Amino acid sequence: MQVRFKFNHWYPKLTKVSAITLYPYILFADSADKVSHILVRHEMIHVQQVRAMGAVQFYAAYAKQMALGLAAGKGFWKSYADNTFEVEAYVREDEPFTRKEAEEMEIAGFKVHPHMRLF
Image (cartoon, rainbow, N blue to C red; front, side, top):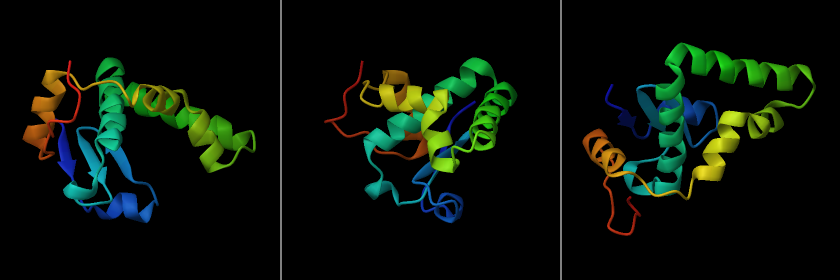
């Protein structure tokens, strides 16, 4: 399924995050010209995770990790930081985009700049 980008979206603004992946959509709080390629990369890693696991399994596992963290008294942001899906996305943010991802991003409305690394 083709990923779709939505910029200046109300939902990430309401939840006080820069972006959120609700596959096949990536919702960004800012306009396209203000969104960094690092943030896009982070969210595209979540797209990879959803595609690898399937949407139901991914979101169930993600929610379970968040719930366990909250139940352990970690609070929302610590639970988020400890979530293995987020850990992976943060670790891999500096990886170059694949050509397929770059094409998909262009179709979704994000301009791929020459300085962005591709492999």
